[in-house]
Image (cartoon, rainbow, N blue to C red; front, top):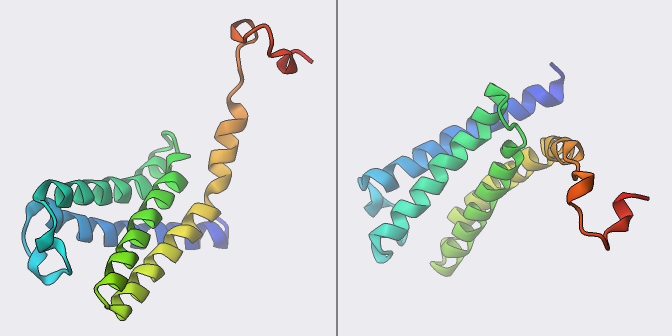
Length: 144
């Protein structure tokens, strides 16, 4: 195992634990009063955010650990990065600059994982090939 791979696994595990801990209370509904703005949101939206965080946490670790569709790991990191960037905007709107900086840090960790594991997406895409007989007749670029 290379050093980069070891560091990426550590970051994936760390971020997965963070999002599991952040998403579980949103699903259960306990302790949300400590967090900014969740009392203003409809309960189904809070549950949806919790589900995406828990599934994203699983997506950071399980696909690569099991070897089943490992290219989902960088896509999960991208999705979680988008979620925390939206949370950064939420904190900035509430004038919570330290919390916004913290969520920006989580987004940067997710970006490092996505970039570091992006070769899995490229490798999966390279294995895909179009069946020759199924293409439209005007798509001659595949037969050249």
